[in-house]
Every structure is written in C-alpha cells, then in structure tokens.
Image (cartoon, rainbow, N blue to C red):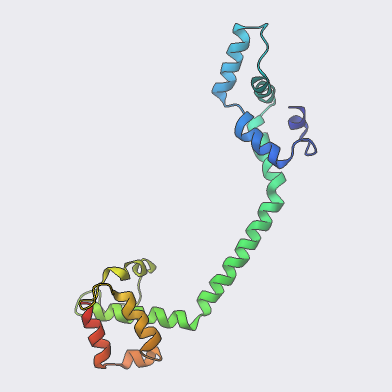
Length: 183
C-alpha cells in the first residue's frame, strides 16, 4: 500500500498494478464489509488478502490512482502499438484507394447489379453500400445451383471483359446469357 501511495514503480510494475486493479482493489461494498467485520470483531486480525484490500482502501482515491498510474506506466507501449496499427491502416487505406483493379472489380459489381435490377427502381444505381458485397451469394444461378453472383462476377472479372469500358459498351450475348442464368 505504501508503494501505491508513493507511486513507486520499482516496487509495483505495470503487471503488478494490473493484478492489484483486477483482484485486490476493493469495491465500495467490499470496503463496507471490511469495516463491518472490523467493528464486529475488533481483536481479530484480517486474513492477508483482506488486510491488503483494507490497506489499499485507506489510500485516498485508490481506484482512480491505480487506473491513472497504470495508464501512465503503459502509455509509451500503448502509443507505440497504436502508432504501428495506424501506420498499417494508412498503408491499407492507400492501397485500397489507389488500386485500379479494385475499382474495376467494384465497377463490375455495380454493372452486374444494375443489370440484374434492370427495370426496377434499384436499377441504374450510381453506387452501392459495401454491405451489398455480403449479399452476392444470395443471388443463385438458375443452371448450376452451387454457383451464385460471385461466380459470375469473378468469371467476368478474370476471364471476361478486359476493361470496364468494354464491359459498359458490351451488349454481347455472353454477358446477358450469364446474367440471365442468375434471374
């Protein structure tokens, strides 16, 4: 308890603080129980864990002190970890934003969706929610039941139209035949 009062990092390491915070930092109800036990049995010493909790409870604002000190001791490691994760996220974001192939794939998905929704109010959309990508497997192929819209899209992406301009202009039977299988 003295080390906690003095914020002595040589005695209480971040791992020790975590254990104290998790297991030895008494809640208000526990402090009340300890006080009651001491009043009812003034000559009976507390067991070691209860004595430790009692001593910690005597420190002003002990819970806030432990949380704040733990944060300060772990800040550098946490900040470094967050910096690394942010750097990785930035790289991923840059790769996604600059990917020509991803843009072409999303354009193809939009074109297929517009074709399948042609004649409805959802046809000729200018974009779609990313959640739509999770629903592509629900549009089944009428010929081969194990295939769905994802198969059509990736077949067209890897084997079909070489560029999206060609796809947009394309009115070939193969595109429409493959699309009709999904209707």
